[in-house]
Length: 159
Image 1 (cartoon, rainbow, N blue to C red):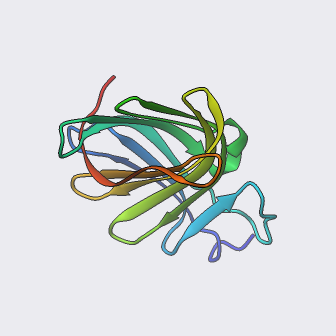
Image 2: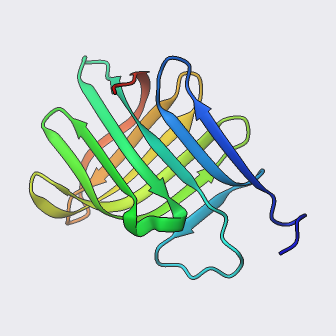
């Protein structure tokens, strides 16, 4: 491994009084991703995001997100999301990626269970802006949109 090609950086970002802890491990700059279905052609760069927080939408509904996702161990990674009467629990994280420069965006894709039914797919994003934001799209087992939340600002953490 060449040092100039693989510079590993550990960045821990803790939002001021928001408590969502985001952890990113990887080479500096550019975009990084890892997929459970794609074979690595060069040494993989680790991408990880971890934390718990909630946000309130414009109708005063609460959205909770908890996750522990690491590209080095997608099989043990997980995500949980609740909003109104919907509670999504991941059964498989298939991909995690990181992009951006000054504002980092983590994208997590996977499959989960919702209302005791398996086969829902989701794409969740966590944006490290000020304030941090979350978004999610959930499709039912037939690929039909079940829920889309384009962007919610994180309000406060829970412990």
